[in-house]
Length: 186
Image 1 (cartoon, rainbow, N blue to C red):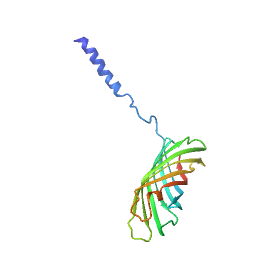
Image 2: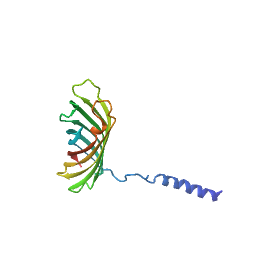
Image 3: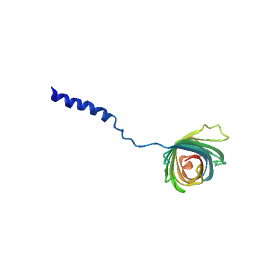
Image 4: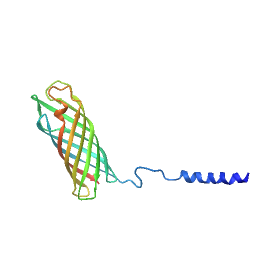
């Protein structure tokens, strides 16, 4: 009987030690949490005409490397499609990878995944909803500890525009360039 008691006792002593072992995680150690917000100005082409979009975005920054947030953008200037003034807006989830954020000049890879709407200003047509995906790359300059300027290029990929006369996915899709003024704790 004693020859079984020692192994059983040993197993019961080792179980709490194995349960207290640290779990494996994707991110280990302390997590630094920061954030920013600021205005965005973008220039693109809609239906062959120059379009200026004004918006804003904000994000939670994790370990100075990855940002998760949201943004919204609206058409600022008058763009005509078949003689009608276009109204346009979109927004959604924004994800950003920040490379070498401690350097004076560094890069970011950014994307927006969201939803938008378009309509004509003086017509009784319903608003047309669409899916939008905007991947892009930026250069970012650390001006102060609380202010950064970020500029770069994105590609607007739009899907789902069908109901507005004269407007298609192709009219809203294309290259966009923009600048972001980021205010926060980095």
